Image 1 (cartoon, helix red, strand yellow):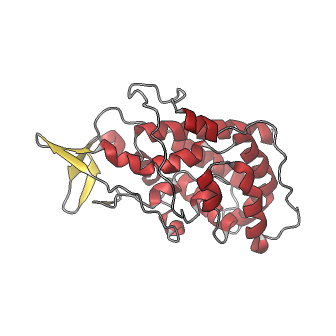
Image 2: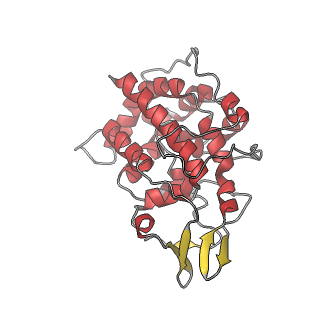
Image 3: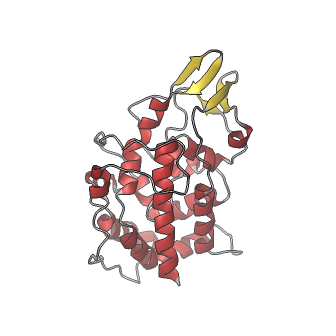
Length: 274
């Protein structure tokens, strides 16, 4: 298993888990003074993983805008090397969340997108493609030591509430339409990776399945302490691939909200492609 560094357990690579084309994009960004989100509504720990998670009214309002929107046009002759400015402009209408617009900005967006999706599809950590990120959670990773057991402090999961809030705000219908506009560039960038045996579309579907198949831990999450690292005490969790382990670090409530959004987007993308 990949080593879990105490106190900085997955602060950057967690973001990679959320990446699918276009969704990926807003995690390429430098979060400039992200505002603290309002608390998410409690979610029952016994709730089935495939059920719709409860969210508060602030998240529901952030997600408003799924209705008919005038999409930003995107020129078909944009080259991959010159695609960053028009891609930024295109994605700007995917969310009305106040943090989303501040998060837009990076270089080689399409190429990074395809590389990250490819890593996730293979179950690997895409951290090498995310070194430019400046993500500093307000809370550190903490554990609770009780009666000889080491347990993840549930408060540690709150570090990622802001990311989940922005993700939830994305307009799935708009995202799917933009994916259709950007797919030629995504396929071109994917071919540069030297994998002619499949398309980017197929790899994207595989990456989504990796994230959606990540189990949601119920109750306390026990750890085993190594010399300088932690490992999951549950063999089922410890046996997951690196990509899925990163998603686990966000906590049950955030995982449920994220997986529900990914299912929704996957459905929209499928409808748009058929």
